[in-house]
Image 1: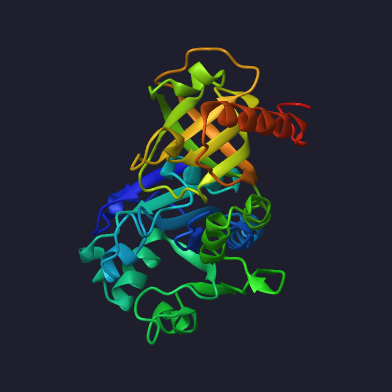
Image 2 (image 1 turned 30 degrees about the vertical axis):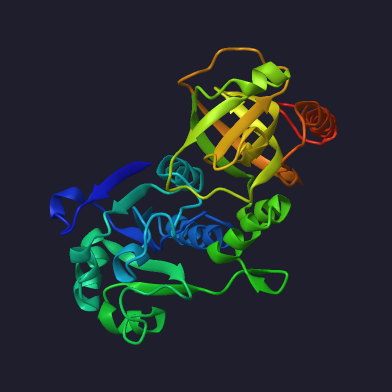
Length: 316
């Protein structure tokens, strides 16, 4: 997959030669609804012997349009993970546009002329609710008007599970509720978080449960505070893990949020390494224990639960 980062305005020399099927969208989460759009494009590209291109943005348009912050628009994927999911889905050319005020000010016709025709698109594929400007004048139903017969437009219908649209908003709601199995059902893969292992307070080691403390990218969405069964990847190897999102308030109030993973049957120094946590199941809420001994007994119960939880590791 060829990755191309675009700073507006698009320069013609940035565009690979050859006609393409172009998929459009933000694709936060690359969930099953997004995958349906991408696979529709992949099928058309294969039928017409064209490459499949996809154009997306480096952050949510609401940051520009609605003056929202990265805190309120935290993403479901890191850029690296999103790119890997696109590659796995069969994208040939991956355009990442820097969504700035200048790009946002592009008129609908100029957008089509520059970022559709200019990318050599002969077919455009997008979800039914995609827009490229104000929805009153630049929704999917308006696309053929701006195309001027230079390309075809394919609108992919709403994708539902359980009579409800599969969408990023629904996934965020489920994350806030700790419903990780339902999140995985909508994504088509386990929700994951990647972070660098950093030094913490070493309390876990003193309790007999040494944890990997993760420095998570601040713009990535975390799920509900609590303790989870997780699958932890160190390098290419997967391990069982019990991972907490919380404040460690047993040891004092007004503490910062931490993500800590106890990796079962693992005893290596991995400070500075990047590891990935897949969140499989919510075990319990975070509790302020009255004593350290009470905390240790709970951790033992959490470990037993994690060991018994059905999951595959590697080629099992």
